[in-house]
Image (cartoon, rainbow, N blue to C red; front, side, top):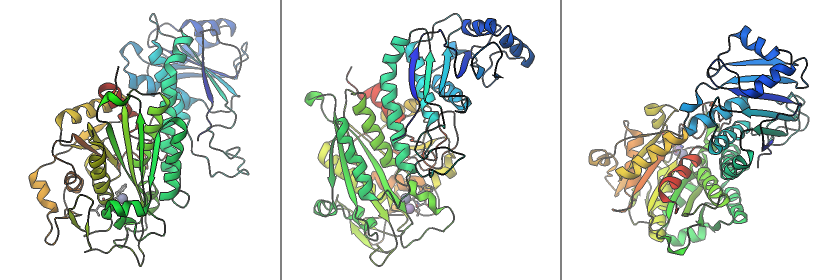
Length: 508
Ligand code: BES
Ligand code: MN
Ligand code: ZN
């Protein structure tokens, strides 16, 4: 996994080395540490502040290089706006933004000072800030070769030289404690990002399954179902998608039992894991096809989440199920017009082999309900290009048969900044997937493509199972830059579902 600069917490005295970033609230007064630095530098900081007209507003800063009188290579005063009005996402984003200012060229150590103006910043907020620092520091550098002078040594590290980030705050002991689950979170998100960023020649269904199997090390029970087992279970829809590939399909079942045996039915999360989606015989155009290495982002999120829950010892019983297949055209590939019988017994007419994700999920969702009777069932999938037409890249599409679950998810989205927008389901839309020759067909026509895909999934959800489908095609891969993410694979969904679990499914 990613080799990141180590984060630690210290009190508000700042040792003189490396780079120091001081977070300043909006208003006329500089924080005490900045005043100390000003004294030692004989007024450099206050002059810089005055000349630049710095008022502590958000997205402003005063950048002082090689300040005389100080041993620091750089002092940055960063505007935070009014932190008294901050929510958890604001702290996270501020941490990301400050991390973005550190180039790694100033030396191995960075000091970041966060001190409230007249109020103490809560340890939980400091921890969120530090999580933002970590998430922003992620870079996928695995395939940069050793001889790359510009980018430094070949590994997945984020910087050439930055090794240590010390966050100075009012109560470092409490911050360290609050940071433990945040660190588990950072690891979970970065694991998901690593998986999404990995090219498909390296990460096929079997290799992905092996990476999921690694979760055994953190206490997750992992079972890998091979094609023979899937055949026995009757997962013919999933197998049909993978039958054109030389690489065998797998399903992985991960169980984290953090709430003990008497906690009732588990929370189950299912992920689409198409390790590469060529479209199959209904082949995709060449332009942009490389992006389809990310068509397993749903499964990556599930693995990242299970890792995170285990690492922070979440008091929840959660099950993760991922369907791992490669969608390839070949002499053994499924054809348009084929009819397959899914595990549930429903027959599917395959009109377009590029509508493969729903076939994979159909069997995984059925298996999930058949075996685990979920308290709630959430699936994530890079399911349709159409969801980007509808929502762009800011919101993931949310579909649900349960208003409460939909509301809980929407709220968790607002809390974490992994935002969701609910789209409709209904009988008229369901008509779109009626087939002339089988029970249903796997495409729903020209309009409302994300909705007919969701209707297809709902055909495999039992009456009474609270279920939600997240279409993350626009948010999990080829991601837009944000304060906390500069990676192609964003790791979308890990923080979102962790928040949902914390709010509603975890035992106190
Ligand atoms: N994996 C794609 C959806 C996708 C597109 C994800 C772009 C991320 C970026 C999915 O399997 C797919 O091909 N969907 C088709 C469905 C159609 C054939 C009914 C689509 O969206 O065009
Ligand atoms: Mn496809
Ligand atoms: Zn796909």
